[in-house]
Length: 345
Image (tube, rainbow, N blue to C red; front, side):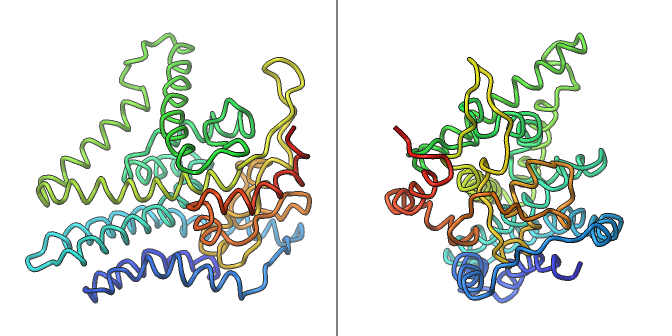
């Protein structure tokens, strides 16, 4: 369990930077996109899977659930700490920008990743996930990811599955707009089955939007206009990380269309995986993505390495940096897509 507590170094670096001030506010950025790639490259990958006895013991331990549930108070604390820091008298531009980026990195790499784990679990945990996603203004992801992405992954119907050749920046526009539309359609269909109007108070999209507005108003009351800019900016940085991870997790992988509008079942070929040790310990085993799609409710501590899954060239942080440069990304990844899927004609 203590290995996965490594996830705490992400908000920890943010809070440490705020405590020290000055250029230290940029510590979280340096940690995530300089130190993490270096450590992932130096530390051997880990492809071991728990055996049946170990899996049972790991599944029953409450401590693993506490680790992810604790993300809620930590996330609230980090956002509050950042807001009070940037609005304190004497805060410099370097500190304000560094602190905002740091909080955004923590929101994306810690709060959203924990929220992703929680949204696939029991009702109480799903509620915690909605709080975490509302803190970055992206609560509709709870609806779309579970009931949209996991159904349509690796097909043209999934806005979070990038086709081969699509650059990250085009994808970001496609997925942010498409995921919201998908979530609205899913929620409207659910309410229709219950005989309710789409604007019924039980519409989760409306509830989550109201929560986001309430939090934004709270930021304005606490910190004024600068606090609102800070809150919106940290959320945008977090969502950028989330959708970049979506991009690298499924880029170019496609399920074969067996009949008009019908696709083969998703299998190990349709998610990029990584067994880089630091990535998986700091991100609750997020890199074992194929097993997550095969068994969405399987908790992070027992996710398994799939030998047949296509492998990313490095851990998540380094691969995200690669995605930020589309020509370089295509040079590295397109041959890997062709090897996994067969050449594109």
